[in-house]
Amino acid sequence: MDAATLWQRYQDWLYYHEGLGLYLDISRMRFSDDLISTLQPKFDKAFKDLTALESGAIANPDEDRMVGHYWLRDSALAPTPELREDIDTTLAKIRAFAQKVHSGEIHPPDAAKFTDILSVGIGGSALGPEFVAEALGAIDAPMQIHFIDNTDPAGIDKVLTKLKDRLASTLVVIMTKSGGTPETRNGMLEVRHAFEQQGLDFARHTVAVTGIGSKFEQLAKTEGWLDIFPMHDWVGGRTSELSAVGLVPAALQGIDIDAMLAGAKEMDAATRVPQLKGNPAAMMALAWYYVGNGKGEKDLVVLPYKDSLLLFSRYLQQLIMESLGKEKDLDGNVVHQGIAVYGNKGSTDQHAYVQQLREGIANFFVTFIEVLEDRTGASIEVEPGATSGDFLAGFLMGTRQALYENHRDSITITVPRVDARRVGALIALYERTVTLYASLVNINAYHQPGVEAGKKAAAAILDLQMQVVKALKESGAPLSLSDLASKADAPDQIESIYKFSAT
Image (cartoon, rainbow, N blue to C red; front, side):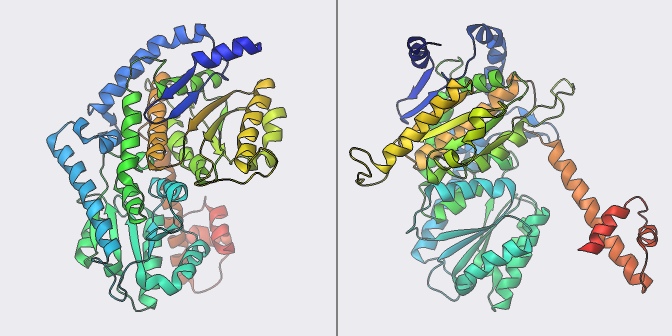
């Protein structure tokens, strides 16, 4: 494609949201007009599906649930007055709680104010809050945040050791819908033990974000925890950042949660436009469909050219891969759909894997995220007429061009700065793209049978471990692996039993 044609294509396929100052450029994706015509009926259906979803249609048949994370940033869209009131009341409660913590009205028994936040959760209860903390958390924030997001003992120890001298002024946020997630339960028990070791009252330091009516809510009430915030059953973990899951820790860090919600609301409105051009989520879904042949044949590499967006690719891994990674389509056909996501940051990627991206196997497409604001304040010139930010922009544009010249496709998203409003908009943009793309490829983005199967398999292994321990205690003497497997009533699990013994 010659320069004039490419320039015209850029103008034809550049989206601009004036209110957000956000650009989306899909001109470096080589889809044809014929593909657009072919997909038009699918897009017409996708827009109708999105409308039905927002109106309260059952989208998670496994649990007979609606999917309504977009109501969180515009409660007027919620299908019932009760839901609207719940959303508004929860948001007001989060704001008030954060204000009282910051002022010292709510404080720990042994300190004038809480100084730190310890967030305990996993998956959607960790990835979103971690991304937002990295993107928006200030060095001089009213509270610094720390995360336990795994059941790795060494990792837990590292976090608790860092907090050891400030545990008496640490506010703990436990996030779990039912209390049954093993990793979060283990983290809570480890943290409780650390508090008890220092003679601290765990309950007077802790809040819960959980399902209302759950056993975990009852535990928090019985023990007299500081507060309880709802984890709604119509919000999935991977779309929960703009619920209490993400807003409680963000508000405590002093992040402008209202601006995040406003940015998401603006993006939601832009992506309701029932046409391809002029709808950024539809345009991005088109690009995904084209590059992967409607089958996810290429991976998505996310390259934000801004340090504060480093964790965006980790956040998107769950949102996209858990939503789109499905064995069967809506008609029951085996399709093995999905888009794999990974990423680094620019210009670190220049010294990591751009070599393979340009010259290796072409099994990917790139999304560059460009941020126009270099820093707050003036920049020095590191070379005559050029700042560090000029170099960063040059690396992005150069990499984009080098990849295109070697037939590697890319999308570019440009925002004026990394702030709460634009982060909310980016979250919403990808949520909406996932919804539209899922409709294009005829899958359900809002159930996760594979996740549940993995949890059941893990539970079975833990049950086996307990059987083995019991068999060893009852034996009172060394046993061969085969005898031990027999006594544990698991003769077909010798390898697993060996691994228990080795650790």
